[in-house]
Image (cartoon, rainbow, N blue to C red; front, side, top):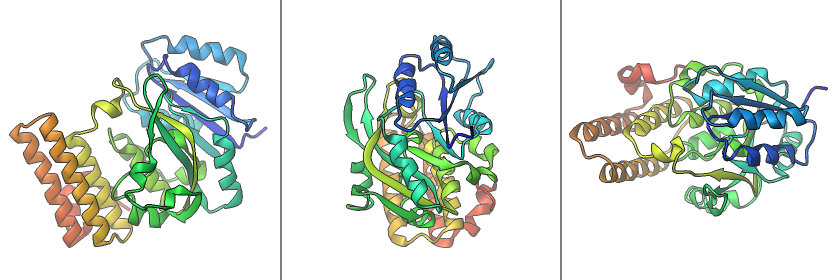
Length: 317
């Protein structure tokens, strides 16, 4: 039977969290899903845990790498290529979900065929699974009321008004998307990102589709001292990738001066905080100032002036 949803669990060294993640997928109120678990050559006992569940659950398909791929997005692609479902859920291996996550999000796709991406609110949890906040506070800075209730909005509006400022989908585990939107995805470009690749991914999907949102907090987004996202949050590399995405957005959608100002102010605060807390080397400061110079020139003169300067880092469309 052709599954409606393919769940992809890409894992690397998350043995401590795998049982909770896998069980939160198996216990969804929607049944008949396909579950693909990929392991990127973990050095812990992840493989043993995965095989234990696979032996007892016929829906689970496993794929083990002999060598580490070096990129989570290579694992995403491998899982998506294997997937038979029309809808894809990338269920990150260190996160976990409420039982009705799939039920709530799938209903949005059923109601509106224009929706290409849909997601729910996320709780922030620590290593032990304790909730210490949610993403709503960040989203309220963009719009004080929008994320309080369910909604459906044109993707290009999201790219114009919100994505230049923050990634409104901070965690893939909270979202489902239509596999059909990936036919022209530039996977090589996506793999070049180390910190902001997920934002590039959502930008690509939302160019020609609508975004749906469920206000209930059915996803639990884990923050850990050992994860890449917590260790490398404040770096010039991140600013460089954000600059690339900002110029890309300028080439695709109109962005108001109000949004530009908010975005630039936020990145400046981020950069100042980073150099104060981590590294005050002159080379770091100069690299950061270069990125801001490119951002400012692009904001004032447009992406066509800036593109030749950073041709190797800007997607061509």
